[in-house]
Image (cartoon, rainbow, N blue to C red; front, top):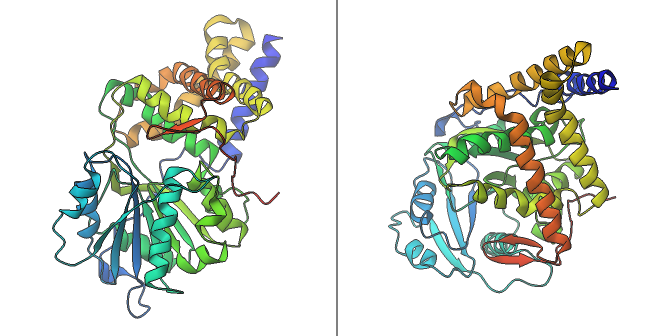
Length: 392
């Protein structure tokens, strides 16, 4: 029985390593370009950056300053949607020096029924962009209020979109990894995200896999109109991946990679902070399905925990197959650890990290069934709709 279990785990890992979009690789990563490196197509296209912000006083100044300082040769504007913040987010943003007149601050209004706060703020920002340039060409860049962008970031994103004729370019920004909890758990967040949405599959137009990272999404305005605007995402709580699926289903071409030009400055000082980040949307990802939750827990056990247990406690062939499988899982994590400049010894903790993520996913389901819903910025969405963009 243990031998059969060991063979099953090994077979799963063979499939993951060889046939699952090379999820374990370090890239892809966009090389920075200078503004004159844009594809020569006349004047550089206009870019409107929409930034939803709620209670982001600690980061809003540096984040907005990095956007207003972009070295981009075309028209560029920044719309901050102050999502009814209870701190000084709005006043701090309005007080920023803006010699080029790139920044506008829009005070958000109460969400309509069925909308999450963040997505409703994004919707208001996009509506403002459309009001200023009805049927305008160019791009919308969606980003968060806790991200710092290198001066050439927007030019690099637009260059990628133009060169490969892409409708949507998204990047997983560099995440903060300073505290002990961050070093132990944040790299695994990126690793598991790539496992769920293998970048090679997302970037393959023949694959049905679609995904995006909400920290950086450059979207062609014409494509946004084609899918029905932000209204197509109404009810979505994992709005970035929902948007990616809508674009891909409409025939759009996607790019998803890692960024070396944008980094998040949001800290996660303790395990509880990371637990809340996972639990916020983990059960949404499973479409609020108890069956999918059970299958996910079983999958986590088979992929991450059982091989280590077999290697440590089984005997004979089951032990050696388990050890080889555990070693394969450790090796798959090493490129991610190198990206975060962490010791490879952290890979030995993968079974314990998997237990943490599994427990947080179960906690997310418990919160839902106890009526607590999804919590974001001190707001709970107990009547959330599991909209993931799928048409069937």
